[in-house]
Image 1 (cartoon, rainbow, N blue to C red):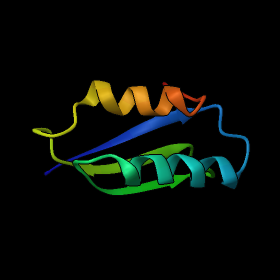
Image 2 (image 1 turned 120 degrees about the vertical axis):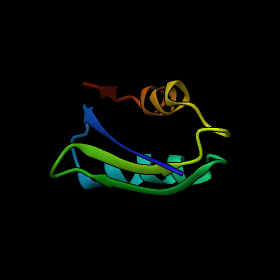
Image 3 (image 1 turned 180 degrees about the vertical axis):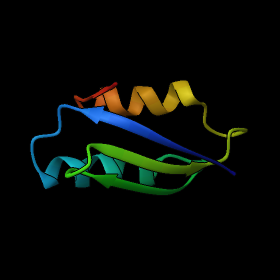
Image 4 (image 1 turned 90 degrees about the vertical axis):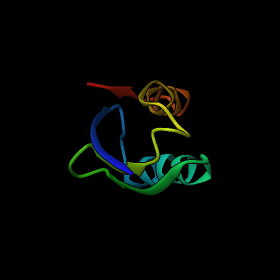
Length: 68
């Protein structure tokens, strides 16, 4: 497993963070996802053999947010 913390921009409320967290939870290969609205970050633990960093970025973008 690999860990990464992404700086996420565009979240306007805790509901945004919760929604992004649910998207990460549905993705095969992501073992743990903690998304913080207050800190504007997503802390992830994932299997790089199953999900790439590029895929993580696409999940964030598909939810309507950006990575700094």
